[in-house]
Image (cartoon, rainbow, N blue to C red; front, side):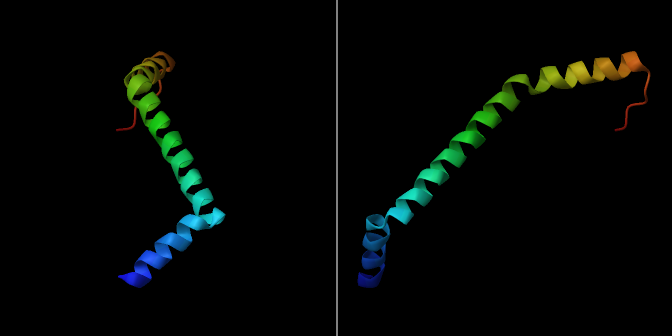
Length: 62
């Protein structure tokens, strides 16, 4: 357990470790924003594409 705590302390002291955490947070934020956008407009885009497909007369692949 002592080795684990020393490793955690070393990780927190090093700037590279904090940089990795920062990039992980940025990546998580990007994923959260993308999921929110998809959930908000996903159904509308699907309806629009189906209407466009019907207007063009192309067969719909299911």
